[in-house]
Image 1 (cartoon, rainbow, N blue to C red):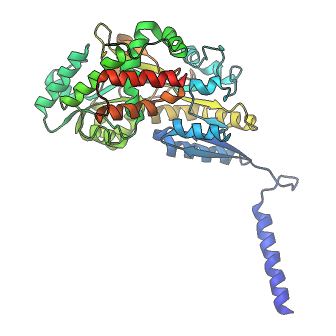
Image 2 (cartoon, rainbow, N blue to C red):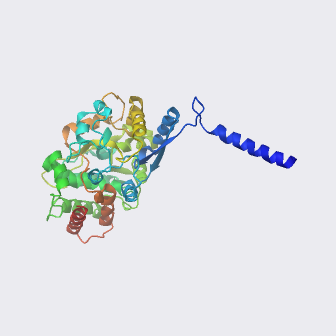
Image 3 (cartoon, rainbow, N blue to C red):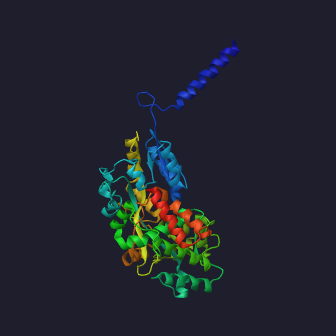
Length: 422
């Protein structure tokens, strides 16, 4: 009998503990919890995002945010879409997904009143005139360089491709132990941006931003034209490799390796966007006063140097989400002035919100000079999903590995992939 009573007491205690663990409302009813799925590809802010989610959940105990980060997010999300497991909220957006109706129309969202009109324009879908994504920041991309070495060698922003190669050769001659230009090609998106900036950039400069966006949508750019922009782009990269102006492990070195090489002084130049600055300074605080910022010279003669000046840190909401109110509440928190000031400074990028003032970067004056001096280009958001920066980066990996017979062969393959995507 005592054993039975002991067993019953143990069961009763377990039930009481379980009941104590269940949140109750003021009236004693069980409080339900809503879970929203947040899928991201932003490598620079994984820990920061998790911290903000924890703060949000503390303020909103009835909502949990499941944050999933993937380095190869642009391809992982395709698998999710194919299996009908669309995340409620994502940072991975492209034109194909918009055309397929994957994302909710955000045109009437209240946050647009706080966002720069130019950023809203870049978030506007050309086909419908609606906004299916929102961007929280303005980013810039170009070539970061070691200011001390440039000053010592008397180097300035290259205005032509030949001038750029001459700068790299001067660095190699003066510092044979250093890498003139360091690529982190293992993370393929870092190479894919080269096509965005150096190849697509020429088209954007030639046709203008609206014209190039429409041309990409309509697939009217002839990427395989003899001696055209894509062939000249491939030839330019092959020239850098053949002359030993990039690192030998350009295809296998990671994004982290690229940052570390620049922060330590091993690499004199890297191709990146403003998002890299904070990490470089964290690795070596002394670099805060030694980071120079220059434009991308054109790989085609007759065009001006270019600097990326575009929307960044985009969000889109699933058109099928059952938790729109909860997702909007989460975004309301993430878009608050205090959180956005912090994000702007963590990412080293100016905010797109007009009510957010931040000390976003030690090189913000240099960045403003470039924006005012050189041709501004945007991201290639109208490129088909089969040619994301991850995908095009893998093509450049093959190019640098010698898998293409010629630059013309590379251009022909790029055109073939573009056509297939349509």
